Image 1: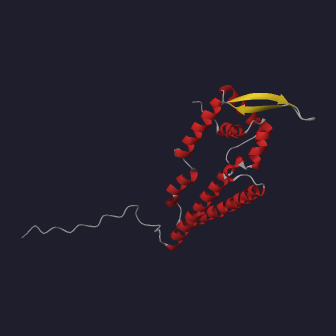
Image 2: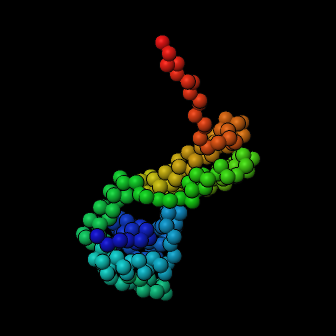
Image 3: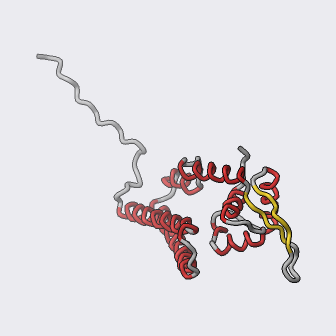
Length: 202
């Protein structure tokens, strides 16, 4: 099984819907805000579609010209490509991947900050994520207005749900540190309580 870049995988998913030419695929990805999931540029997308063809996952159907526009080649997914897409989707959705996010690393060492700095940083991140969530709310509203079927933008609602969960955790944790509910001094592990000498006499 060949390894596909995220962009190539996204392109394969679009071709599973219907035959398309690369520019149409690019516009569809922007329309659905899929550029939030993968970094996409027209030149890179053309290159990845060429790779899909080389792997036998896609095939060229023909080339056509509309008006004064350049010739555009339409591509379609092959049976081999559909099998690869299905297998990849089942694996990616069912099996958690090993990921090493920067924030998780930072949280594991946040005790090196003062309590005040930790609270300030956590609340700043929560505020930034609120702004990001507002952007996803706007995207969802736009997609609903365009009457795009919800199954095509479940990723938008997923990311919004994850942002909401992060904001809640950040806010609650900052409040607990600020209130002293999470002590910010003392040893990492409490000293064991001294044991009383046992009376061996009867």
